Each structure stands twice: as structure tokens, then as C-alpha cells.
Length: 426
Image (cartoon, rainbow, N blue to C red; front, side):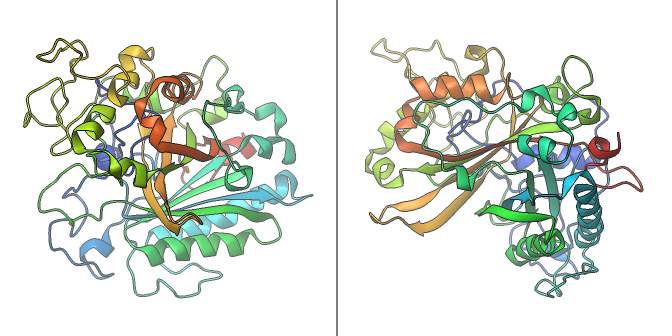
């Protein structure tokens, strides 16, 4: 996989409360693609404490994320318990006007659903008795959309296709797409209801290309705030960048200037990768071997360069040696290969989810990570890190990248405006 293991954290002052809550649970252990959902239990959402109950009238179900803000919801917020990812392709002849009309319809529905209200159209009442459950819907534009909608002159230069990486086994039918949506909530029915609503509203304008469902730690599942574990059993998300840390915005959000289009200012780029974990092979390794592949102890996430029990927050010392004189963190350990110091400071905000879709024909689990990473420029974030990981990361032996997508994520929805208005009306 690949999500960068950051030894520095980042972000300017002046973020909203939503932003400051945001990345408590957004991280993955790995560089550009190895960790799974690294959600952290936290106390800011209603009912997030241990033993909390949900429900529309209070508790976990009452959590509400504002729809209109500087940045789209679903980037800075903690990863919810459930996610639906989907991509749509414009139908022939839809054009710019059809796309605009669709995004206006989606905007109205999403604003109501995130407030815990029924959608005005195509509401099948599946989630009628639920609250908003921290629902967020995040929109991205794929590269092919710009030609189809007559917007080729507005396509960002950084939305160029991702290069082929060593070991890729990508299925085009499960990646890319003209319109990408990330639908997160703390209830599975709420996410499914939102997706069905968007799909119905898209009829005649855009058709579903692919869909994947994922999960993360449910708020309140742990007795205290802890970093979550991925399907490999590793503590995952230790060093994801966080708002409030120096330089955060510059790493995650686009700024005007250079070859970045003006309409994308305040937006981001999203890399999606479906990464299957070879869990049967991984689980055959003794725990000490697993720890050497990662570079951290499985019990508490402490780096192998520090004493056991020192904790996951202990900085990784890549120069440290063991009693035998060998590197304490092996040369091909994931945390070493993914370290920003060895990747020109490349950074991204990871917000991934685990998935488990049953068994493959050979009986092995079809399970792993729905990798999501937001960044200001994939050419300086995901691409160089994943290139290095694919060539020298010991963890890559236990991973298969099976689907991929790159999307331009427009900024937040202005008052009275609609999703993607900066692109279509700018």
C-alpha cells in the first residue's frame, strides 16, 4: 500500500472546530498504501464514549457535520465507521449543462441528508429513523470528465494519469470514473441510503461505474481514545499530519499559482487505491517477523529503534542499531522506506477504510484497504512515495494494488452555491 509515515505533523492556525477535530482518526500506518483504516476513538461526536448508544434523538446518531464550509466535508473529519465509495461516468450527450443540473440536484439532496432530513426525491425511507450519523459526502472529478463536459481547458495539469507502479494488477472497471463520491457515516444504512439517492438522481445523466464499501473503528468501541488497527493487526495511523501543525494546509489543499487552476484553490487531489492484503501469508509470519516488516511493535506501535513500551508516539530513529550492530529498523521496513526524509518531504492526508468482501476462488480473503489520500499535488505526494514503496518496501510482498483512481476535489460549497460550482461557473 502506500500512505506516507510522517515524522512531522502540520497545519496553520485559524481552522474551524470541524477542521481541528478532523484528523484525529484519519491516518494509515503506511506510506502510500499499506495500512488499513486507522481510525481513532475520540470524544467530540455525541455519544462517542465507551458504551454509547446511537439513535436519531441523541447519542452517536445525532452527530452532524456542516455541509457548507471552506473545504468539502469528509476530508478533515475523523473517519466514520462506514463508507461507500463510488464512481459514475457521464452518459453520452450529457455535456456541461447536464453535469451542472446533476450537481445541483446532488447538492440539494446531500444538504438535507447531512442535516438528518429526508431527501426531497427518491427517498426510500431506509434511514428514516436515523439521525445524520456524521454523514459526509465528498465529490471529486476524474480526468475524463473534462473532455466529456467541454471543460478540457480547465483540467488541472496535476490530474495526469498516475504512472504504472511495480506490482500493480489494476482492474480498470473498479477504478477511475468521471465523478467520484466518498460517502461516510457512523451507520451503514445511512451511507447506503445516501448512495442510492445520488444514484437515482443521476439517472439519465451519469451511470454507476463501480462501488466499494468499507469500515473503520466505531466511535466508542474502545474504552479510551486509541489509534485503530488495520486488518494486519498493526496499530495504524500514528503519524498522519494534523490540522494545527505547521504547513498542514500547504500539503493538503491547493493554492493558486503555478499550474494549479484558480477554480481548484482550497480544493485538493484524492488518490484512491483498492489494496488487497495477502492475510493468509501475513498471518503465517511470527509476530517478530511482522514487526520487522513494518518497523514497529505490534503490541503498542512503538518503533523498533526505541525500547518496548515506549509508545507509538516515540520518534523513529532510522540510524539506531541493535545489540548485534544491525539496523534496529530494517533497511526494507515500511516505516523506513516511507519516511518523508527519504522522499523529499512528500506528504498526504490519509483517510482509509478496511474492506472484507468474502473469499476468493482459492479460499483466501478478499480483504484489505480502501486507500484514500488527500494532497495538494499528487506529483509531489503520492506518486514519488508509491514509486519508492513499490520497489523497496518489504510490506509490498503482502499487498496487491487492484484498483486505482485520481480525482480533483473542488473546494467547499459556498452559501447559495452547489457542489463543483467553482469549475462549472468560474
